[in-house]
Length: 133
Image (cartoon, rainbow, N blue to C red; front, side, top):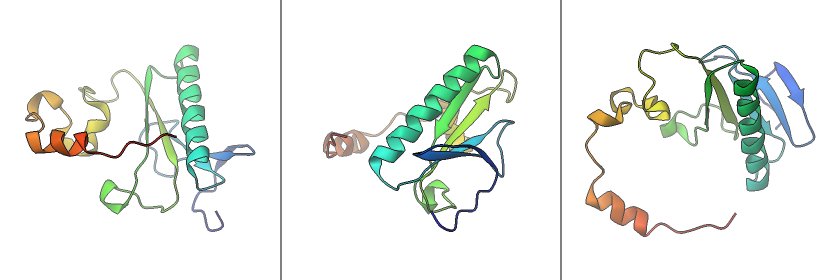
């Protein structure tokens, strides 16, 4: 990626670069950015992010972690190049973390307050094309 907005490199590997997030959600929020824009590279980034997250928890750096990706403007993506967020979580960093990534739409974060999915949604999912990666 030629015009990448990230500059604060933590680790640079053959397949991806890890940057400190410029607008961290919590201390330690990092981005895994693949050097190639393809599925294999993204899978490698996800695997690395999971390994980092589990290592952080085992070593006591954080209590838990979130991993995510914003794909498209409607999902909040502002840098139009694929990248994976690894966000360390600590007990007490929010009042009620139940729902985790569901909080991307705050009023729907607490799944106990959201109505069950509609029949139409389940019919749509049942027809979803399957991919072998």
